[in-house]
Length: 406
Image (cartoon, rainbow, N blue to C red; front, side, top):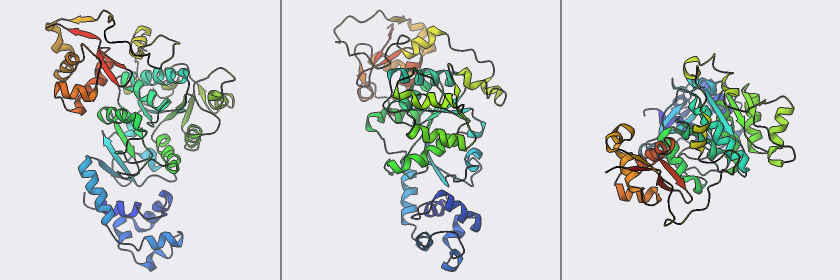
């Protein structure tokens, strides 16, 4: 990690924006040379005086603390001068100097990445389509990118995981700060199957002022942005505007007139700023020539598969049904013969299925009963739901949908 402390020192200068940091780097070439610069070296820079004064503060204490936190949390730090830094972000007028990554490191320039965005307080219709389209995108080879808020973001993540693909969440705070707290389990799912990405160091709270800068990264990593449901003004439209400014494609899901939650998406379509979407293929056909191996000739999911994975009837509310009493007769479950179990499931999955066969359990309870580490439990739960062998019930409780022969 030699030299990283200078990157973290530079990005921690008070009042220094990403565009300002880029101007400083253009002049000094490396952050280490900036660190060893003197007052007269900074006088010619087009920066406010308070920022120039902050460059004279040579303490590395905070930078070293961040490096220690990254080591402790197992985070990757990527700088704009790293070979793996996305070219898509380098092309921005204000690219992030540093990215903190928890989970996999993706070669974004080789990914057919599609951002899925929308309202937090969305309708059941919006939830259903966010989950359905994200599932289709992931199943077809695209990389779904979203935030991690409740509403459309959460449903997009869930859909992508049900589609069997990884997913990336771009955050407005540290990758170790779970916000909102109600979605804390989604953080673990994303980190296990994909990646959490932020330009803010660990421990940084999710602030309102961080969301607009975050949005430019979300759209910047993607080939296109899908707006599922939004009003004419708000965070979703800010992301869409970033995408338009960056030359990205914009797509939108239409909805009946008169619903305020669809005024933004309907207006985008009406003004010709967004392409109307009815299925994931409406998006992917624009990029199949560019990414033929990832996206070529993938058959759409059969309707019965979509229905099973979404675990709800078409047109019904996507919100979970009320919990039924455990003593109520459960529906008939598939019985998996002993001879087929090893071929279908991993050892961790078998242990979890056995533990959750009689009652719906939380992830913590499954860890206690199986002694399988939490990160493996969360990963197994995701894959079991994708296979239709496990269902999530209200309260983040999980129950097996298959019966293991003993």
